[in-house]
Image 1 (tube, helix red, strand yellow):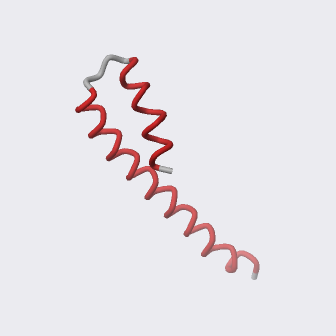
Image 2 (spheres, rainbow, N blue to C red):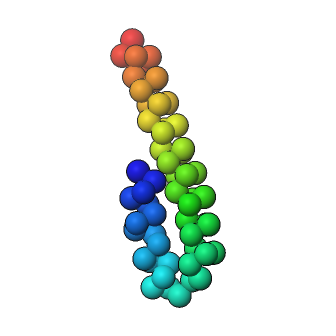
Image 3 (cartoon, one colour):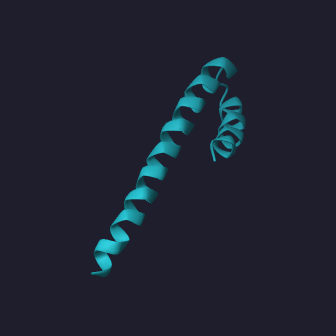
Amino acid sequence: MRAVTLRICIPLSQMMGIDFATAYQAIVWLARVLNLILVEMFLLRENLKPQLAE
């Protein structure tokens, strides 16, 4: 998933005229954080399903 985020955001940052080195560092960090948030949400949802069924 992180690779998809990188492949989308890097060309966008280049079109906005942001320096590649700066954009790459920010995008890598943001992609990792975004993926961690999504995984946490998924795991929380999966853990709550059995409780909601009761």
